[in-house]
Image (cartoon, rainbow, N blue to C red; front, side, top):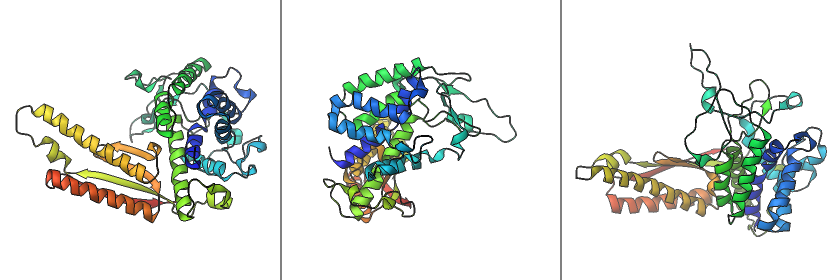
Length: 357
């Protein structure tokens, strides 16, 4: 397994200890970092082997800066820049949380995931009561949040058991793991902090995915800028302050949109219009899917970095490098030529970049 894949998998597993912690009947006996590290060593050795499992366990054990009451778990003490990169990505990914004094914050494992719609406030109207989701698999069907809900260790243990069984059936790579995480962790809150103004409307799945996306984009940026092959150990060659740099615009959003969809889909005058409408809609969806996959592969990214796809457009988080831009430009140009040959200008692609720190 190369360094890039270890970093992505480490980022996707870094907070597994939160689920183990909440499933425990005695959650205060160990930190979620320690529980996560133990879980990875116990459950991933058969999948990846002992050596890789121990390496992945380190990402769970050391992903915080100055953890309260546990200075031995500070990632900066490990002199491992791969761990530092994931810890930095974790910090950036959790940036939606309001700045609070965590020394005075309690964590309540019974707090469920709050619906994001509970945060919407309408001027002149009373604030709506928050509603929450129960724990279940994403594929179980349509379900609605409820006003009053408490989670139990048994709820978390059930999800954890099903997650563990699902892992045994997969040939694990980052894309396959992401699908399993989406299925089981989409309704688990990323944190359960008890403090005024601190919400729990971000799922653990979304937090893990964005952490991996940020870490992977940063890895690709650093590898390209410093001309280091992925077979080499990138992070033994760089100063730690460059890993956690927040002043360089090393990330970018790639936005791609298909123009002409409305006329292409709805301009139908023959019999069987409904079937044709569905077919054309499916065609556009698959075109976007194929294009997104091609860009991800060309830029050495996984589906962790596909932030959104739907409605005729998609957004990818990527490394902000000249080579990445040139690669995307060439792919879009090639697709547009093919679209013109096939549809005579009725469908075409437009794209743009937004760089940021």
